[in-house]
Length: 97
Image (cartoon, rainbow, N blue to C red; front, side, top):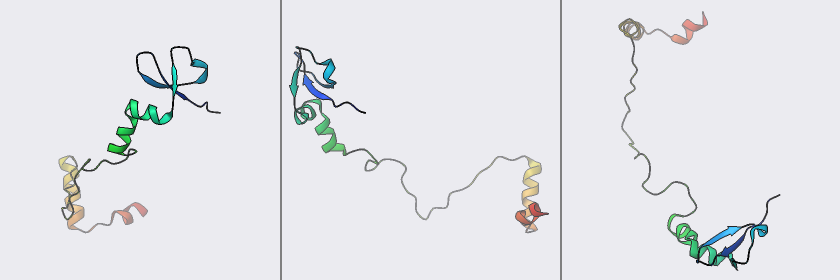
């Protein structure tokens, strides 16, 4: 069961949401719309939306570019990989036997 918040302004003009049992004489009850306006929540919602991916954020897609796969192996492992490639070894068949 969640308790409902009430939005208040204190004597210095700060706004916040509190539970009804925290209410004292120094607070004045305001509406949720007033709270959104004065706390900056309304500006944030209008400017940035409700979260998610921001425009222009993250890695830039590189379509058509083949990425190079790199792995560190010893000389012996490198020789085995080259041998397997040159002799067309099927790893799945080797693992079955």
